[in-house]
Length: 292
Image: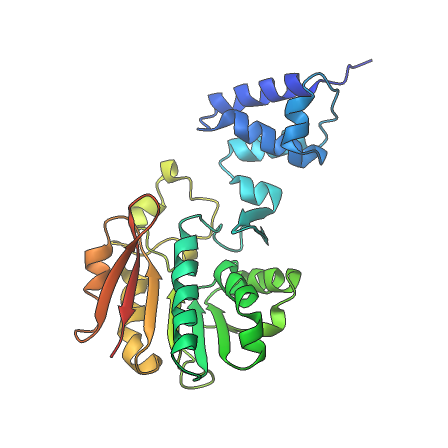
């Protein structure tokens, strides 16, 4: 009769395999995956190393992790700004640095509301999993209901947009966000209004970096990562469309990669005001543009 392994033995063996496989956080990965496979909290596992544990499904998760698949895809969710977001290969996994994009968008909308009673249109292009739009819908639920704010989320990928809708539905705010399958702001001024606030986390990783195995991006959709040879291909198209697609005096907030601030700022119209906002690591992370 085969003995049921203990928590401590399973974690030690899994961490060893992950370390040999090149994981930078082998022990953490092992704990998170075993917790997911068993339905136990990590704290319980750490407090009961001698407990016997069934490992059904754990080896399969371990194999997928060794193949480079992100933890968020293996678990099927990601915690972001205290929100539990469904995650899978349909969209990019929400990153901590994108919280700055949300914070700046929230502040911009709040400031505009305090300034006057004019209705505001905020549009998130390339919404992906819907993280930013979801957080904004929850923050401004009352304002949306009163007609003070209209929130639009669009994505070129139907699959990503489907995931965004699932996340909005899971948090009960699907009726508060207009979703559109569109390339950037393509429907603005046609089937949808021109936005006062544009929020965008577009692909900004140069192609050679996006394809590099050491970046570990191979399991996420290339459409959401690859920004062309210099990483600015999609950003150029967005900025070129702004004069015809946005309301007068619109504010545009775009997340960027390290070292891209000057090049992205130069894409703004000549008569626009441009600021760059650093993230908590001091990396210039969001370009903020005020159009005339």
